[in-house]
Amino acid sequence: MARLTAPGTAARGVRLRLTPWRLRWGCGASYCPKRTRAGRARAARATLSWERRGMPVNKGPYTVYNAGKTLLPYSASFCQTPDYKLGMLTWTGGDPMLTSSWTKKSTPIFQRSDANGVYGPGHASFVRSPGNTETWVVYRANSSAGQGCGTTRTTRAQKIGWNSDGSPNLGVPVRTGTSIAGPSGDS
Image (cartoon, rainbow, N blue to C red):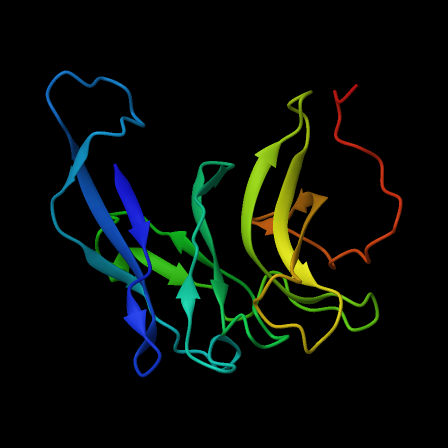
């Protein structure tokens, strides 16, 4: 099992690191809280121009499994800017602790929508609907370009689709106040 961490400083930026964990004796659960760190490896660092707005950042990853693929959406660029967004790594096989086992998508998978008044959408997670027929992205964003990463960010959710290659299609961030149908199976 690997845990993802985001060490770094403003000078070096924030990079994704994979950290393997060993379960301690007596713990059979895959999410046992009593784990010990056994080393770490860099999965990615902010090398693309859209990942470096304000400060080079790759952080806050969330593992998504779909159509036989292991995907790792992550937040990129500094959250103090309206250009905080989501990028994605795809595991290509081999040792997941090696950077060479991951391919980085060259463009963001989710980003600001000036037309919808959504700025800095990032730090996302993905959940299944209660009816288990839909996938939703849950993320934080601002309603104005100058709000940064303080207390003005709100939590938002919207249904996503899937591209033919099995990667998520998050669409465009929806304006707050927009009525959308609730998740399937939600009563």
